Image (cartoon, one colour):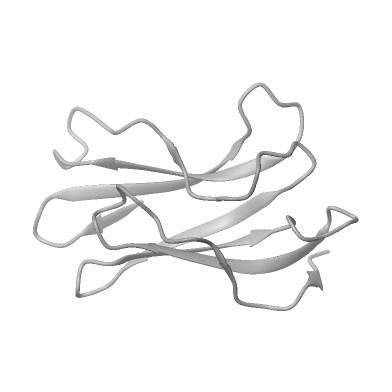
Length: 113
């Protein structure tokens, strides 16, 4: 969870098993504009690859910057034929998490085990 800026927004990022799936995961984002007192937005999928029950998006982290940008990084198996090798991926939002930039791979593939 991340409290960001003076606007009383709280941002939450989580690894979530894909809806109605028995395998795989996605990075999901939700925000509260009332300081977390009453409401959070519906979860929004940050990972932008096609939903695939064999792919894992996990160990997500978020950080806010001084200019209001929200930055997210996570480990991702989308490009791995074996569904275990991972890459570090990155995305960002400049509008409080309403929209997210296209995902960018920022590392080579590696064995996460």
